[in-house]
Length: 123
Image 1 (tube, rainbow, N blue to C red):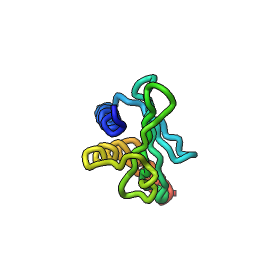
Image 2: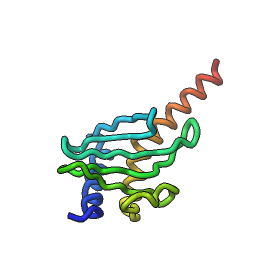
Image 3: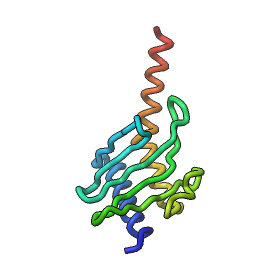
Image 4: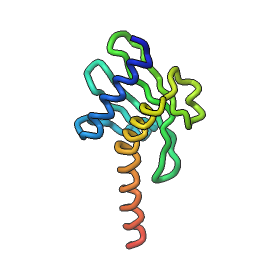
């Protein structure tokens, strides 16, 4: 199976499980990475750049292959690092990755920021 088709299938399934709330993501903020394991043999990670206390931009996603040690790297066309990726996200995949990133990282980060600012102003 070609890497693009593999990436499309995995991202579609990961997106579905993420929006349903059935996929557990881990935020490894010390290395600017969120990661999930949809199956024991397949892992997905999204590398991002911090844009301040309440924002971030994803640069690329990596999907491990279920056999061997290879992976598929998907670049965000809006990122300067996208050129180093094998595959640039097309419109459907880009929408799915953007929504995953928003649900897993941006929305919780925004809520935490708003709570912290409210506490600061009340103190």
